[in-house]
Image (cartoon, rainbow, N blue to C red; front, side, top):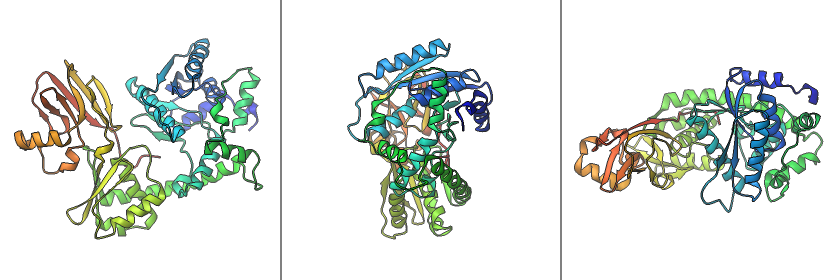
Length: 422
């Protein structure tokens, strides 16, 4: 694509192809770098856009950069919000943790402001780097298919309209308009695998190992992934059940009912559903889990925040790992808890805490209100449910219909579905 071919109309058409109605409200993640700055300019006159900039606080310049993005947005008459990553920062796996924090902050803002679409500026070169990174980590078909052009983030649709666009076209687009951008020094640091791969692609050791060809391979593999997901969905419908209490049940016979790739992907999806909700397990860990599930001596395992235990001899229970649940927090009028439940609370919320039911709450219910411990919610599942406490103890368990106070009312909605695009 020549830079002159990269037009607002072209990107608008791609957004519409991805399911975003023309002129619709769209949030755009903009760091101030070339890619996201170009995306903002390509979209701002075609959609009702709001810009979100995440200040990770990992560099001293990050706050000033976020403010400068705001000034640029003001010149375009585009609303801008800075979202700050609070709390202790990681000392390892920094890029992955920062990415997760970024998506969590932006998708939460979208949910709280009724914005259904979040656009990000991943481009063809990013796709090529992702394919090689996943190849190095031993990914299967799903991973080597690269980034999907759309992805669900708990009731917000992430869209990537630039995956077919080389970075060079974005640079040309900005330079032709004399638009400056911010260079993040971490994008040149060879401490990160992605940067080393980027440098390799700039001077490939093998003829043909170029971004365009790798992106084309990913596109072909996505067709294979789509076919696998079709049969994976049929397998899940036949052999698994998921519940609004955040757990799922799988029959033992499912493990021998389909080709191994379908079984592996179905089990991965159940782990994602019950666990951290962002990504499925890596292939080697998934293969080990499926081997263990077929072992008559299997007694349980945890993986990506999911706990898997045998159930009734011929079924497996997939539920949340208690150790990975959020720390207690003050109850507010709206909380998206554990990336799985939307809680809406009304009344005087002072003095109330939100946390997992846990052993303390379970024992209280067992002693004082056993009728609320319904038979189809196992103890390990019930203890992972959100519950409201005050200084005197347990007050509300929305999932179980339990409440011993009239001062507040709390509703809960499960926000995760089985088999969403990765």
